[in-house]
Length: 407
Ligand code: MLT
Image: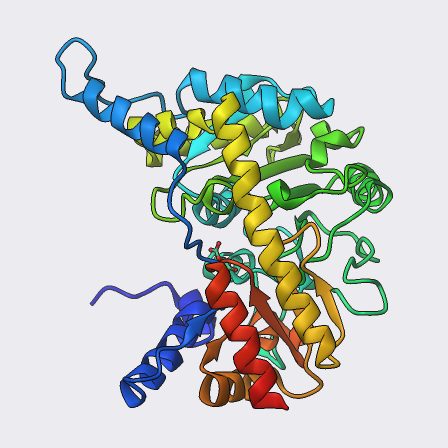
């Protein structure tokens, strides 16, 4: 009989959001007349913008005509989209990225999960704690960790994000090869200043490490002094890769489009005393395993860079940011210390009690779904995350329900 990948046995029983979904579904079957308000997983609820829909329609029409039909596209994504990405997301911020360094994909979850495949099994990995579980679980699957004990995997280096460091941990105090960072942060909603990000870049340059920078929430930054891209920092083009997503920015969670920037200047050891451009490895991996995001989706994504699309995504992110303000002020009024919700769609709340207890309490008493902080790592214990991704009236009602149930 074939033997499974034994590393899967090290994984915790279920993925965080699957565990939440199971508890919610059990609540729903026991309470058919009390539909819960979902502020757990960061899934958008507002419809696609007019520009995105127009892009989809136009692409569908093109696909319906022999003269404009398109089959397989370039694995890296269509050039029209990669050029638009570079203009608006990087050149406008002074970051010198070339369209050839952009790889369009069908999701930042896949890209952040897949990227670790490029590295040796003995790569030393550092992750923040609390952390988006994909970074950790994919390294567990690849065999880079020992077993799970006391909420952490042996062999991983954890960088604790705590109230004391403002939820921006300093760079590791030991040599590591690969560092995952996410700002604005999921789950804490914290943002990092240019000085704090520069410290990471300097660390990586000194240690010969690589930063995997998840900027899926960059669109929510309103404070112009906060970097949106790691490539705004000098030296990052030699030691960093960046992941972006259209999911939260443009409401594409159901359409699927994202991109990853791999600068040509990043080189990694080839294991035989030489170096190899990281770009070559990711290109090889994508060409082998991926046939590109679909043409209509890329057309819709490109529309988000036009004048109308840009205004629409600004409006969309303003909408969710206003929800975040409502959440944060309601929870603060109830006496809970809060982080995030400013320049970020997530509010991180110190509940002063075990996270899963608070989660169950809010679900059962208020009928509101949040995310227990402990699910993101042991440093998340005692916290919950509330997502601003829902309709305004739902968010207002959720906050009323929580206020009443906790009064
Ligand atoms: C979250 O709620 O943390 C995100 O929606 C998960 C994701 O983007 O995969």
